[in-house]
Length: 265
Image (tube, rainbow, N blue to C red; front, side, top):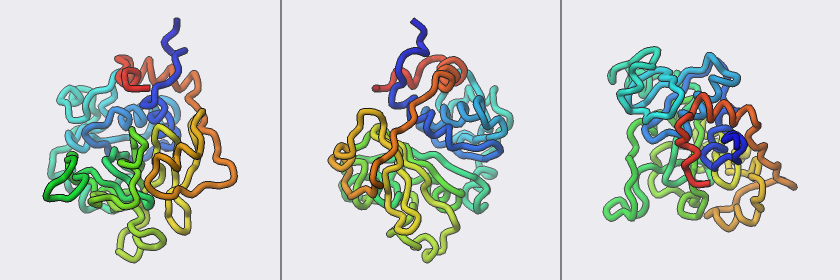
C-alpha cells in the first residue's frame, strides 16, 4: 500500500492548513519545539512559495531545508542552511524591527478568546500547576510581526481559556481596538489551528470565531471543549482536507522520516 494513501494525522493536517496561508517572498521565524511549523514552511516553499524564508529562532539558521524534520535548535541544520545569524543579529531583528518578520508560528499552553497566548505557567505564578518554556522572544514576535499563527495540538478547556493565566504574547488583548490603544503596531493573530477546526477573529470585536470545522467535528464539540463562547456563522465551513499532492510532497520531500505521521491521529 502506498503510504501516501493513508489519511493524514492531526499534525499533518495542521501543517498543511498553515502552509496554504503562507505566501511567496515572506519572512518567518520559528521557535524551538516546532515540527508542525517547520513542516508548514517547507511545504509552502515546495508547493507555491519558493521565495519564502524562515529563520530558526533558537539557532539563527536561515532556510535549513532538509528532506526530514529536525529540531530547529539542532546543529545539524547548519550544514543545510543558506545563512547563519549570531545572537546579537537575531536580537536586533526580533526586538527592534517592526514588521521585519511577516509572521511567526507559535505553539501554546493556553490561548484565549482574543488570541492572547501563554507559554509560561498555568495556575498561580508562585505555585504553578504546569510550567512551559517561558516567554523568550514571544512577546516581541507577537507585538512586532505583521501577524502570527497559533498551533494548539489539544482542543480542550485547559487550552482554550476565557483569559490566559499569563500573557506571553499579546493577541488582541481585551478585544476591539485594544492593541491600537496600547500602542502596538498593526498585527495580531490571524489563525488558530486545532484538532477540531480552524479559527479566525471577528474584524470588529476581535473575538475568536469558527472559520471551518474538520470532517466529523460538530459545533457542539467545539462549545463543549472551549472555555469561552466562540463566534460562528449560520453554517461553519468544512475544512478542506489535504490533497493527494500536498500529502505526497509532505511525506516524500518534507518529512520522509514520518515525524508527523507518528504523532497521534
